[in-house]
Image (cartoon, rainbow, N blue to C red; front, side, top):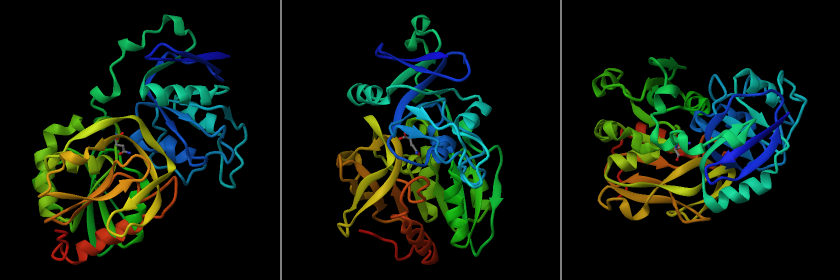
Length: 359
Ligand SMILES: NC(=O)CC[C@H](N)C(=O)O
């Protein structure tokens, strides 16, 4: 059955889908990893986005019950060149298309993804509609993702505690990935996941040893209202911010964010640690970046930079034990080269932040 994707700039690309769908709007973005489609599909940071996979054959090892990053598939839609029709994983019980369709997510295949991605690279991530009848679609009618409150749809309803351990980390949930919790549990932490709008007093009542500001979808500026609380919290407890969490901490301390023309989404984004000069590969999935010159020098110093475009990849506070990463140290999908950031965070907790002054 023929289907189409219509971009905000007017171009229409053709494909096919196994089942007809109502018109579906999303922000179109592309992911360059060769594997990891299941983690992408279940990472809440992709909520509201139509993900184009650049690797031409997606779905080879099926979808299995153990690699989910959240309880359900998250993107608005999925576009591939060829969707593999077998599950193939030793634990796999569904194909990629079956998993997406079961969650009500349209999958378009047989799309010239190379031409589509060239268009996105030139014109940027933008609104797009998947439709059986693109002539009738007006992409401009839909509310852009960056202007919508999306965090409420992905955050936990109420606090949950996972695992046990000597140290207690409270995870501020903006749409967390399960592998962040797994990393902390593995390293001996009890993790309490709380909704992103939990009042400071409630968090104090949980007596955390440290805080993790999670990843999440949308524009960090949607959360402007909460920034003063986040600043107070980060000044009180050793804090790690990942992806959206990194952006929020920058905003909370007076920095700025802006949107990249097309985001970093893949499993081989090179990052340099400016202290050691070491370069490592990282897993990434973001549209927004913290602008370098906006960071107040008395608060944050830049610790990591992207080797491709020089954008800010992480910061250290000069006074408080706050560290952040724009990339994903928990990986999934992608390399675990930067996993040690969790150890550094836990060392800071051990030292109760006393030795964590990075002036
Ligand atoms: N993975 C994330 O946390 C993404 C952060 C934010 N939504 C962005 O696109 O930049």
